[in-house]
Image (cartoon, rainbow, N blue to C red; front, side, top):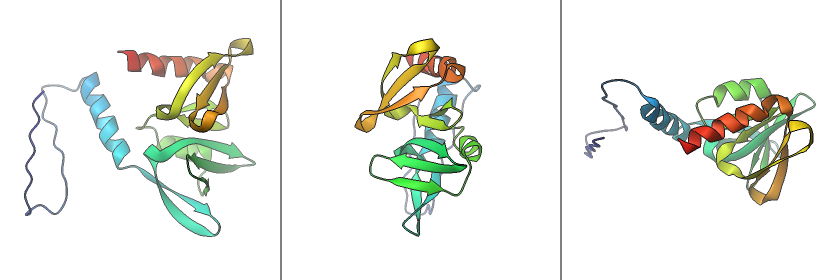
Length: 148
């Protein structure tokens, strides 16, 4: 892979062009990382609206038809429903682990088996999240991609 960088004051914005003979898994991973860097969501806290970078989100949980965004520092309420957030974050490292929770796999510290084919994820700050049986195979598959 050849990387070229042209830094010049004439440019007002950054543009990334990928030239390749064909799209492969490595290029797709690179594009996903680039998209993730620019991904942002909004959240509310104490009557104020905040812009949250997707890479700083540990997990998103839905309770009583309201979605909450958890970062290491704070908790924000999202104006979107969980399925809408899942669609927005589809290109990133977020994966659904239950009907009510999405997790950023970059924050997973450990995974352990639980009863009845469920899993227990430990994320930063030693927060434990339950992966339901329905989604446990998706977690395993996503982790397999990291080993490739």
